[in-house]
Image (cartoon, rainbow, N blue to C red; front, side):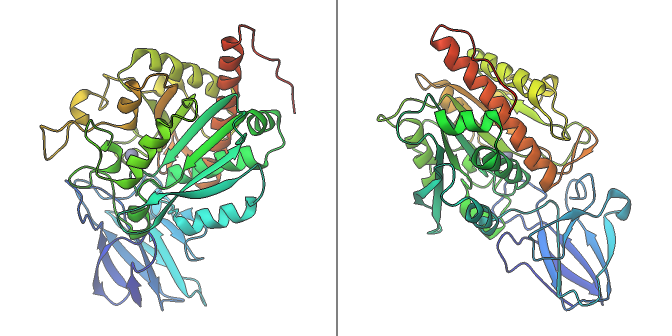
Length: 400
Ligand SMILES: [Zn+2]
């Protein structure tokens, strides 16, 4: 039995307790406080029964459907199920002839997954990619553009993901959203492709994604809190600020920043919700998008606008945006930054849970379906907005 984390996204501190028995815990590295991400593999174990104990603080870092397992080097995943876990331990019978098995708290999504996805859509929907910037680790942080990219767009949308590197389920949502715009033959996708410029930064903290960092609450502050009044410490965030302030282009009509919440408490965090910034006018726009999403959603995952988290409620209060270790420096999210930008359109954070949404299973497939729902809602929102800004009613929608 060989255990390790020496592959993209790998994270765990591993202790071998006995033959075929290990204990693992999240490798917190530069995390302030504690977090729950882990991802490791076991090789040379075909036909054996592995016993794994997962430990962490303050609770066992296992999501609502148990650990996720992959038998194809992380390309596809399934949940083992909550019933497979007892007191933080689970057993797994490795199939005969299986060269390796991977386990994780979620369903990891790294740069290789994005490459596989982009390979399917090369040259379609006007898809182009370029380097946004170089990360601190020397990696090429990519920005994707598609839809109406010739300057004639009626509206512009920015989607960002992995400000917190461990929050991988959000990447499956993003992939579903991109897949729908680039490849679907329905009316919403066609409208977006023809009229809307879509800009995507799929891995804001690419170094963290590839290194397998938690990313959340990274010291001295994480990428999601790098939008304060000073210049910012991460190249990717500085480059996103430049995108948001590009003088050659109109402001974005919608900016969605995709995240995953904590895996606890349950079931409070096991739902899909938007998070508001302080600006009440912006929140009214988010509520419009929410109404559209409730109306057009056809995927298996439930979304209800009553689950949204306006500013001033639950954890979404001012003190959450003060640096944990340096209380004199305000640490702002992209939402707070855009509240102060003239002409900024709708902007919000989406929180998308790891394993369950109000009792329904979250996995790569249902997350992608939710991404398509999100795109349909955006189309309705933008269509209504652009129509009202021209002083006419919304264009009729046709089935397609
Ligand atoms: Zn996050």
